[in-house]
Each structure stands twice: as C-alpha cells, then as structure tokens.
Length: 339
Image (cartoon, rainbow, N blue to C red; front, side, top):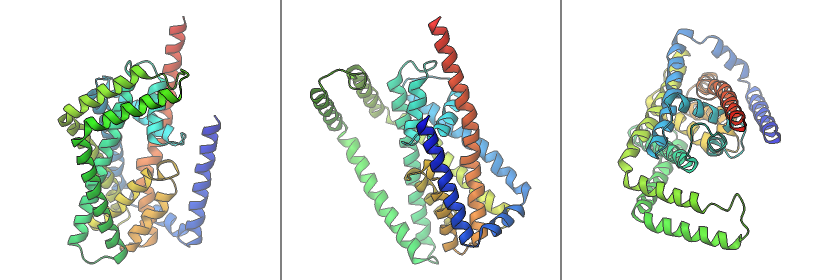
C-alpha cells in the first residue's frame, strides 16, 4: 500500500509540475481553447483506434505466451494486459514488474510461471524491435526532408548510429547464444555459493533450468517470433494513427516525418523515464518536438494530450477495472483451494 500511495504522490507531483510549466509558458489557456474547438467527429477514428490498440497489444502478449507453451484464452490475455498497464502506474519498476507481479501472483490460468515470465520478455523484445524499426524509418524520412532544424537532424543521425550498434549487438548475441547461456549458468552457480543459505528467492535451481529450456526453444523457433513482432509493429502504426487523428480533429494536418519524429520521441520517453509511462515528460517534450517543426504550441500540446488520453489515461482506467477483476478471481480461487 505504501508503494501505491508513494506512486500516486509522484503522479500528482508530475501532473502539477507539468501544468505549472504550461501555465508559465502562457499556453495553458490556449490549449484548452484548442481542445474545446476540436472537431468531435474527427475524434471517432481515434476512439476506434484506441480499442484496436488494446486488442493488438493483448495479441502481442497472447502470442508470446503461446510461443513459450503457456496457453490462455485471448479474453484473459486482454485482462492481463490491461491490469498490467494499471500496475505499471503503481509499481516502481515499470511494465516488466507490473506484468510479473500480476502473472506470478495469480494462480488460475498459469501453471508454468517461468514460461509466463519469458513470454513477457518476448513481448518487451517485440516492442523494442518495433521501436527500433521506427527509428530507422524516422532517420530515413529526415534524409529525404532537408528542411528541418539542425537539432532534429543531429537527433535523427544519432538514433541511426545507436540503432546500428544495437543491431550489431543483437546479431552477436544470436551468434554466441550458447556462450551467453553458459555465462548465465556460471553466474547462477556463483550466486548460490555466495548465498549458501536456502531461501525462497535463491532456491531456484529447477526454475532456472526451465528458463534455459525456454530460451533454447525460442532460439530454435525464432521464426515464430514474427507474429508478436508483427503485432507490435501494428500497435505502433495504430498509435501513429491516433496521433494523426488528433491533429486532424484540431484542423492542423502535419507531414509524416513530423508525426513520426514526435511519436518516436514520446515512445522513447515512455520507456526510459523515472515516472510511469513517461508521465509528465511525454506531455511536455513531445509538444516541443512538434513546435520545432513549426506547429503552434496550443495545437501541439492539445494533440499530444488527446494522444495520451487515448493510449495512456483511458487505458489506465480500463486497467484499474481489469486489475480489480483479476484480484477478485485470485481471491475466489484461493478461498476454493482453502476449502
């Protein structure tokens, strides 16, 4: 409960700071006016895409779990993804901790807990591959579009270099996969020697073997990763569509390169951030990216807020309901087991 309350306090502080910055910039009132004047009919595509966003994100999780041998109904995968999104806003360690907290705590649909954790790793891997692909696309569009600020050019070129290094590292990882597993085994044996006393945390010999088995299986069945990776790419395409609908509703269409740059920066900040899903940082930084491309500040801020409402705030509300449902199921299954 303390962690939840502390996280709520952090969220409140970030929101307060964000509103203060916007107000001091003299644009808060203009942003509200831009939101008021938005074309409600043009927001219908954004609402439809939000539903698709939730559905495809859940498919990524469902396909990843199926890949690791853990089969659950798709409707349960939807509840698990929504619940994890809610936990992500409360658990300090982010999405991975949120998913492991939910999946390891529940005992109704997941007989192979370690397989589920590996499924989560695969889901995150797919999401990162999709983001790297967007970086490539963004860098390519910037090469084609010379009319841009120097800062954005430098950022695009830097991203291209980073992506290249990550791709090389990934290829080396795949090539020397067995060596990596051998290193992990040695590290695990060393930890067990240092901590000779058995405990629930360190006594994981059998689960560790399960992890090795699942990782080896994934290495041999790498083609099966294409489905969750494809779904993750589709998820980002839907996110771009929501952002595009937001600009259309405000009557200010933007070029594809501008849209993609702002979106990628927002996704990057939502992953690498000290706040849940980049709360506060995304709402302030993404409008600045659009402003650097000549978009008026009220329009840039309003479009970003609409996009975040669809992909974060609304999903957070649904996630709270799903998390409550998961907790009730866990409680009822525990009561039945006790009887």
